[in-house]
Length: 120
Image (cartoon, rainbow, N blue to C red; front, side):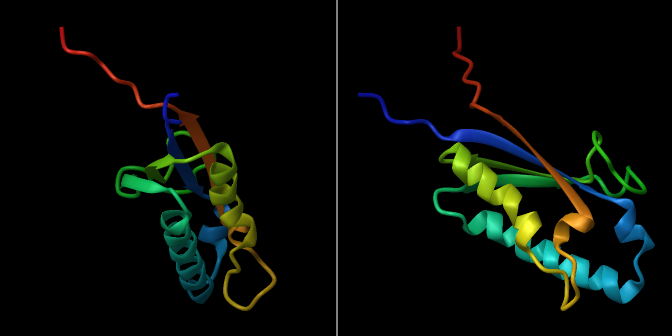
């Protein structure tokens, strides 16, 4: 019986206009919430994060799709864990106000498998 392979997932995240419209204090609360969400993905059972990339120096302003603001590449044990990672945007509070992180950040998970190229 073969071992179940993890999913290779590229989490693509875009900061939206609500963040740019927010006052500086609110932006700092968003950053704290973003950090909690980011670490939450790392802490999900079975997740192995390989790295990330931030495109904030060559892409200025809100991102509603490609190119995204930031990316996180990870192996994830199953689709339920991918959904749990994305759900962190719905559940992570921003400061003590009424908003969750998804008011300010969009996420899309590109899910596939590791591509293995055999040497000739």
